[in-house]
Length: 212
Ligand SMILES: Nc1nc2c(ncn2[C@@H]2O[C@H](COP(=O)(O)OP(=O)(O)O)[C@@H](O)[C@H]2O)c(=O)[nH]1
Ligand SMILES: [Mg+2]
Image (tube, rainbow, N blue to C red):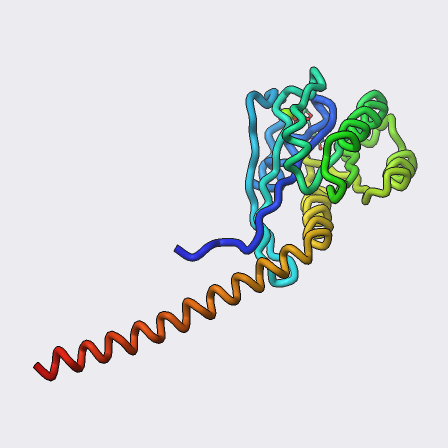
């Protein structure tokens, strides 16, 4: 069967428990919002394929599986990620404060090339807001990240935020991707040639068979 995508990237969602990571992921991959808070248990990820600049990019997005409560996300997750989504809840000052810890961990363990975005989720909860948009965008600037305020509940900015990170990862890996696509083109060309040769071969055989 033909491959359904050209490249695969791993993205990782980090942030305190309850900020809305699982809901954001479901909103992005399944266009659904389930308001009940079900703690993510075990290892969980979801996939989605995006088409960017004519390249089919499959993203595997890892949800940090309840371990965020104990802040013991295994370092393997960090090492394998090409992109990281830091999430806080705009109605929770503490979730915003804790970003320093999450960002520090990533600096320690993640590959240098890792791309990052900062998201303040629950933007629909304006009345309960504890973190201003300005504070969010200043922190993002300090870390050199793109910044979005999103709502998994209304779907506001969800797709934009995930797509932005995927684009950044694609740009950061463009050389690898070009090589890969080049290799893919060569492979397809070779296959086409082989097929041509084979079909010529079949013709010859067919003639022979017919001649008998
Ligand atoms: N108002 C509002 N509530 C949200 C939003 N996203 C998540 N929630 C709620 O926040 C709680 C925690 O969400 P969850 O995705 O489980 O958080 P996680 O622990 O970070 O994965 C749930 O009760 C959700 O219904 C949002 O954008 N707006
Ligand atoms: Mg969760």
